[in-house]
Amino acid sequence: MKKENVIEANQLTKTFGDFTAVNAISFEVKKGEIFGFLGANGAGKTTAMKMLIGISKPSSGTAKVAGFDVYSQTESIKKNIGYMSQKFALYDDLTVKENITFFGGIYGLSRKKIKEKRTQLISELGLENISNKLVGSLPLGWKQKLSFSVSLLHEPKIVFLDEPTGGVDPITRRHFWEMIYKAAHQGTTIFVTTHYMDEAEYCDRVSIMVEGKIEALDTPKKLKEQFKVESMNDVFLKLARNIE
Amino acid sequence: MKRFIGFIKKEFYHIFRDKRSLFILFGMPIAQILLFGFAITNEINNVDIAILDHSKDATTEEIINKISASKYFTIKQIIVREADIEAAFKKGKIKAVLNFEKDFSKNLIKEKKATIQIITDATDPNTANSITNYINAILQNYQQSKNKGIQIDYQIVPQTRMVYNPELKGVFMFVPGVMTIILMLVSAMMTSISITREKELGTMEILLVSPLKPFQVIIGKVVPYIFLSVVNASVIVLLSIFIFKMPVVGSLFLLGAESVLFIITSLALGILISTIAETQQAAMMISLMGLMLPVILLSGFIFPVSSMPIPLQIISNIIPAKWFIIIIKGIMLKGVGVTYVWKETVILIGMTLFFIGLSVKKYKIRLE
Image (cartoon, rainbow over all chains, first blue to last red; front, side, top):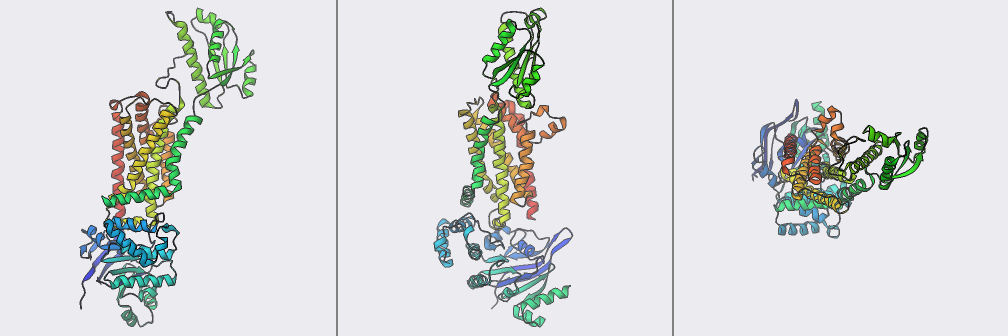
């Protein structure tokens, strides 16, 4: 069964002056896939992602996200994607409920829909007792889960997660990945950047970026075979060494 | 529109849940206006002075009586020798000495000219200045009452004339300045801080990825501050009318319209600052150093522009607050209409458009 592509990038490039942050990357992501976007800090992951979510204009190349062009249809892209940054950006001085209402509101959900979603989300996360507490008082792990749920609020086709597990303990990370699986199972495409190589094993397919280029792209299993190593960590190290 | 209302609601949550910004928003204006009105003032009251009267004739006696009858001065000491003047000052109590020349009355009639030396303690130049002005005013008054119906005009003092604020009420001069500072502070500093806070927290990124357009985000951040600034301006005007009995002679409508214009100018500046600054602290520093200091020092609020060195006078022209102070002083104290302040208004509008244009440009560069 061939699934449709929800992200298609072709020779996508971003330069800042003389510096090429993203160098002609091409890849596709299929519907419902968990796509890992790996690379060391400064490899160009975030820049590439910013082009896909419509807040940075590519220097050259083409890309379509959810069927819309990244040059001319960023408004439509924005309506169809969710985004969670590495800062789990919620408003600390707003309560759990208020945060959900606010983010639902800026995505244009109706009041009734927001209420329905809010109740559902709070019960799923088990936040009933603290739904009127300020988000600033919650532990990091809860903020992270809440932030992810908020990014799914408007039922986007694709969710972009920018290093979503930074600074979170291993158990919470596991829980978090369970949430990701659940969302993917329901048909949401997950585009996730990370530099935790163990997380790469959870992805359907991964791409590894080194110095602005995609140096490897396949399922974790095939990549390990190709490089004849035991873990994704070794794949990554081998790739990085070859480049040097 | 519904998205927009949600956005503004959230903005008010931020403001009302942050004690610091609440204090700056509502505590500062009231504290400042009361402080300037009551404590920091150019007015003088019951200043101790000493008299050295070399002629001791009818005229000098009249003048001395007139001075001691005013509530501004208390005659604490009568000095008999020039040599004692310094001793009187050194004790610190005496702020001024009036030295009448010999044969005061005679000179006045014969030569139509007599001299009083006003010696003031200039360790506090502002007070010294005020004392001189007040004494001059009293002398002037005395002359006028003497000259009534008589053609000959004998001169004692140079012409000084205080118009528009004949009682020399300091607070009347301060109200326009304080209002300018508060509006600048609330509009420019608070908005720049609140926008950079979103940047710092990373929520700005989330907002930009949402279907909200960048200009909607900015307008959503700015609207609550327009509202709060208008409230502040009204509080200041009401305080000055009801507590300090300041007569606002001009049109309140014009005053309101010009204030809104200046609020928008300041907001544009705030937005511009937020496109430059990455952190709240940087935004605050830029606002304080780049906006507040020039406003206090160069806008004519405390130091008159006309007495500045030429280079500073030229620089003062690029400070929006200078033009706003001219406008509201005109409206509040002189009661002038739009025909008198249209030039300043046009300058302010021009500056506002320039700042908005510049920040739009900067903002776009950032997005690319």
